[in-house]
Image (tube, rainbow, N blue to C red; front, side, top):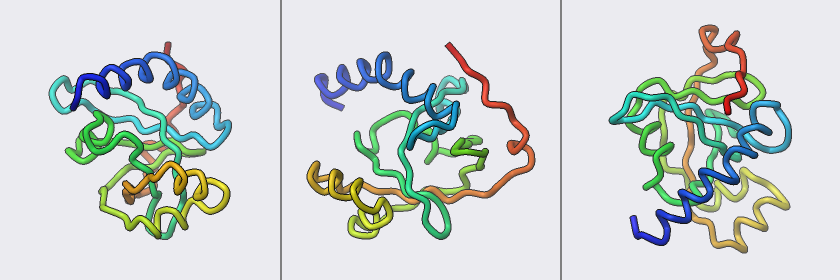
Length: 141
């Protein structure tokens, strides 16, 4: 990852992400939260996402590409879960077509994504799990 992009992502992680994570935990707005386990550290991390529900899972627009930690950790496996109104266990990640991805988000979100030339979509397959269903959403600092 290039230096400028890496620094930009670091700024987002420390500023915008805490605000959107708070909204996701509270079930407010369009935000969801993915909880993933670090590939190397084994630590648990959280990242905000905006998703569209489709048959078979959720579509995520991968704004910053595949070289971000949440995406790499989810693909690597290790117990990733998603909170979007309730808890889901992520069972797989698959490429998703551009036109299908845009259609999944519907108007006006698809107009914005098209204007921004977003072309990276992934299908997050899930399974509802009673083990995570009762899990409380805990606000972290």
